[in-house]
Length: 197
Image (cartoon, rainbow, N blue to C red):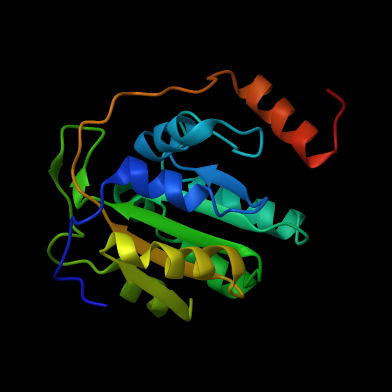
């Protein structure tokens, strides 16, 4: 699939359609729009939201994948956050959890800080970076019709897998989930059956 045909996907409907197919996978959304997209698609206690940890979504998902090999884990993050935490891909490739998938929602902009042009629209191909770190299975999605193939990769293929979805720059309304870290962690642990409600 070509990286030339970018910014084809409408992010909110795309994320909502994808999450309908998660089949019990735990989701670690990155900061900003990925979190709002997950919440807008329908909140779940199986979503581990974080606030203030820019660049840590992939590392957090790795820790969760290693701790819970019985569960599929999806890290849903943005291109800016992935660039900030890029070194985590080396550790993910080294640890090679079979249950981990990473999806980067790439609008080729730094959307949370003013929509400045990012690096993934010109010089940086994140799938090639992931391969360079040792993640063998990657995919670039530019069309809504590829959603099913992407879902098969993210939720069923042996991990670690890494995908990039080229999404349109949009002005979606903010949909903010719970912000209290203790509450988020507690409900997540309850969903995993390791704490009482």
